[in-house]
Image: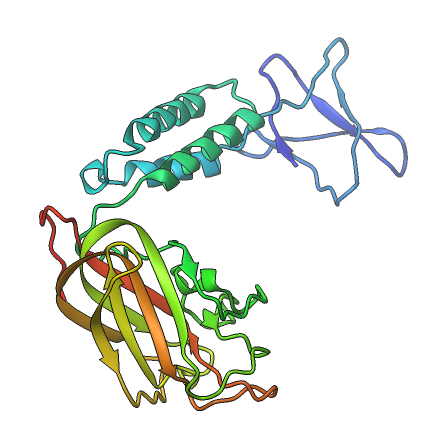
Length: 296
C-alpha cells in the first residue's frame, strides 16, 4: 500500500506486530509512504498527537478513461443515426464523471458501463471492411450447442483464432445427430436490415486446419427469408490449411444469408456422425443508396 499525508501532518508511525511499539516511517523521494501487506493482513498507523487520518475512497479511473478514449476515436460519420444521440450523451456524462475530483468508484463504473452500452448500440454504415454479419443471429436446426468450443453464436462472433487464445472454435453439426455424408444442413444469418450484398467469406476452424470444412455447399441471399437467390456454390472443397474462402458476386439486395451444406467434410465423429465445422461467416456489401463501396 502506498499513501501520502496532508501537509499539516508532521509524521506517521506504524505499530510493530512484533514488539507493539511505534516505528517511525519515512517518505520516499516523491513524498509517499509504503507498507507491504498480504491478502487479509492489516496494519495500525499512528499519527502525531492531536491528528487523525482516514483512507480516502479514490476512484480508479483507468477503465473509464480507456472507454472514453475508445469512444472518442470513433468517426460519427461512419455510423447510422440510430443511437447516436444517446451515445453522445453517455460520452459527455462519462467525461464529466472522469473530471469530478470527488467521484466514487461506483459512479465511475456506472458511467463506463453506460458508455459501453451506448456504443454497442451504434451501427456501422456498410462499406469497406465492415462485416455485416458480426454478432448477428444465426439460425441452425442442426448445431452443437455445447458452449465451450462450438455454438451457432460463434459463427458470427468475430473470433477465429487458435483455441489456445480463445475456446470459441466456431459452429459444428451436432455429433449426436447421426447425419450421413450427404444429409443437407442449413444455416442462416439475419443481418437485421437490407443491404446491397456482394461478398461472403467462410473461414475454416483453426484448430484442425480446416479438415472438417464441408465439401459441397451453396450460398444464397434473400430479402424476406423465404425467396432465395443463389450467389455462389462450391464442390469438392478439401482443405489442408485454414485459409479464408472468399465468394464475391454481383451486388444483390438482401437481409438474410443462407449456407446449405450438401456434402460434409469426410470426417466423422466417434458417434459415426458426418462432420461439418466452420470457424466464421462474414458478409460484406453496401448501403442500398450505394453511397459506400466494398473492395473485393
